Image 1 (cartoon, rainbow, N blue to C red):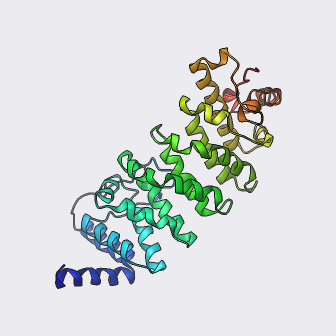
Image 2 (cartoon, rainbow, N blue to C red):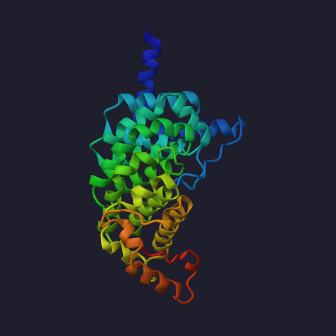
Length: 309
């Protein structure tokens, strides 16, 4: 590169280091106030999108931001850049631009950062980028690492929750669900060992498992997973409504998959201690009957008394 371009990048880095996120936003806002186009609206599919309205960075500004993110070792600047990138990735147009600029591997490299706050912000940015189906093809390279971080990281932490949100987005379609097959038992373990007061983690894991349960190809993996009997304690009218709705949907989906495959006409073979023995056992049937008789409950239509084998 020549001297002038190099100097340009250096200036861009210094400006961003001094507060680029704010200054770029101010620049974009002043341009829009001058009448250059209408603001884009953020995609609504991702579970953790910001509710507010954000200015959209143009291609050149995004390229400078990605260059800074790739080249800096300063944790403060890295986090600031990731937040800006994540906010811009909430807009469908920028989800495409960031991919074309090579932003997904740059962002993905930050999920290995030793600082938990940086990891969380990188996961949040990938989460917003994952709303775009074409982006998922590149983001799938990080699924195994995210699964390991979710399962080995601090329970009920912001990093764990951010990772679960990304995995939930990545499993909305059936395309990449098979990549989670070997982690299903561990996901149930985290579900049952997390802080009982933290419903957010439980709900997010259940949303992920519900996504998997909608795919008949994942039914065997779910039913064969080793799951502690305390799982049935979630089928209770006193459990938080959102958690109860998710576990009822999970069992309903699995049963529907088995019916479609004709598996209910024969004796399925799963190991003892598996989810199959919990869902199709007498204790679960009792739980379901009690839920069906619960007065005034608005989740009764999801109660399914599963057949016994």
